[in-house]
Image (tube, rainbow over all chains, first blue to last red; front, side, top):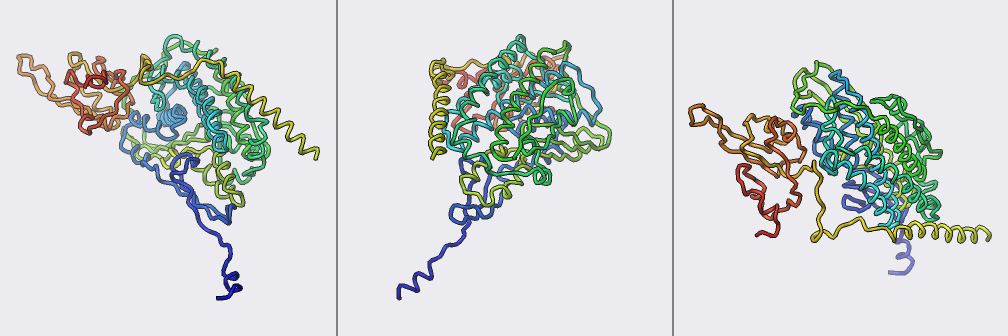
Length: 374
Length: 148
């Protein structure tokens, strides 16, 4: 064999590589099939379903109260918000009015849950970019304050099962409002500390600015919601645009990004946490008296019909579509989870980027597999 | 060339800023506990394992009905006394299925069923997760891990 023929045979070719499902930066059991040309991502296919527990089918065999603990397991980083979205849907179906105190408590819990979720989302994102451990531990430490409060209020640290159709399971314990005020006071300067770590860090800015740009029109077309949509410059927040509970009574801003890149998605989340603190502060100052609790054992028999209710979760718009046939269990339930739509946009965003940037885009979208696979 | 040096200077400045944040935390009290020797006290409302006061229970079965994962199993028989007061057949608790939601505790009209503060619930044997709630010593091993 002569040398020239050997040289002609050697060439480069594109190849497929699996990223996940056990990859540390895939945020759960997500499998990404990447077509690579060297380091560059040519194409990507998202495979989901590794965490499927058939939640929607389970709902068809449980009473309305019995399904509340299952909603904890959707987006397990923001269980409180999932509880809220579900009970709001059932209340809409039943036409139940909720007491003022229950509404305020729900707002406080939802906003603190949002902060806990964003803290985790941001710090794991930064860890994906190589800031090993330090920011994550700071974020976890601040989140711990909120989790401890939830533990005090409902007895668990992750799966709260706190909201009930018509109210909440238990009133706040004695001294909880002082504790919430303390948490708000504690968290404010901590956000500044986190921003001091990230905002002007040359590595972080170089890795995120201009990476994974999601245009507003593409975001809307894909059904992207939440901070990811607002980072693209679309001012859409259900708390402002379709107020539920008593969000219309509070003053707060909707942080919006300009470019829709990974940096904007980080920044919107950071600003949103400050706004959540504002809402929680107003709610705890105006907390009315009364009894927010309801009896757990009540069996609900809604009139035959259907309803769709959505609420603003940390990751976007969580919707529950419930069809009732008049029996104590739902005839059909469909869960519209925000992460499912948010991850759909991933192949479009990572095309043409390097592998390391694909990790950055995935981290900045902040998806949770629990609610994608349901 | 100027850009190159400004990059280096701003990088050093931001490194200093970041180090200042970490420096502030050097003098803060640790938030972690040395686990096996120090243990966290559970909150008043903590939802641990399901437990029962048999004398308080009126055998209404509401806890069994509301359990979302059907982990409780209660059987009741008519008593032998003159008033035919209901008596326990058995009251089993399958911890494998339990999702610690606390609905049984909340629905109980006499606060007979409750959730205790035990949180170290790992076991070596599968059978140990099937618990008889009427057994008085059922949680002895878990409550005092040193007891063998």
